[in-house]
Length: 112
Length: 113
Image 1: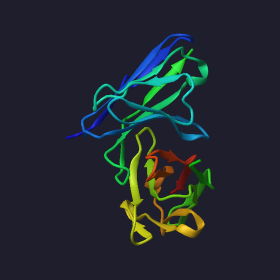
Image 2 (image 1 turned 30 degrees about the vertical axis):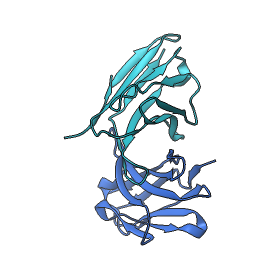
Image 3 (image 1 turned 45 degrees about the horizontal axis):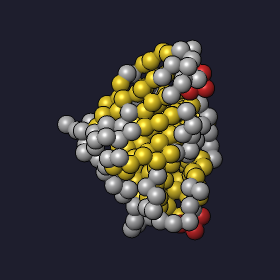
Image 4 (image 1 turned 120 degrees about the vertical axis):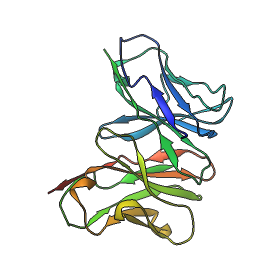
């Protein structure tokens, strides 16, 4: 069955370190999204991509970057981790704008 | 700019009570609308969606939602909630033009047995 997987599921890192969160989908979806979930804020869009070599900034993109070298993967990089980036991160993919999005299981990131 | 607002942040109901969660969006163009549910410790799952046609849509587990274009609203309803409906509920909008999928702040529903 097609799926979307995130790794790692849990990560503890130190302030200032570079961290990369992986997202891999086997749906062959062009559209992929990264969100962070924080209490009281719901899901906020970090970056999104409509296809290979395409990336776009979301609402809270500062301190984050993504790259899309193939259809299946959209890794999220925290250039220099900060305590404010402690959060749960969700990756999602969507075939088209009129279809549902499928979500990964999430990555809980703690920056100490 | 595209945005989604959910009016209720935390709702507590007894079993068999009726539920209505409010959702309003801000965007002038064509949108597709969703309600997602997140059970404790799990990822988001689709409850229902509206793209076009009948503005009253039915989803899984007895949920339904009504799209009122003039009010920019897409409220979620369920006639009789169960303890197993305890979860967080998110309204989401994707613009047909930009393709950005934007979520509301979420509503935590607690159903007391």
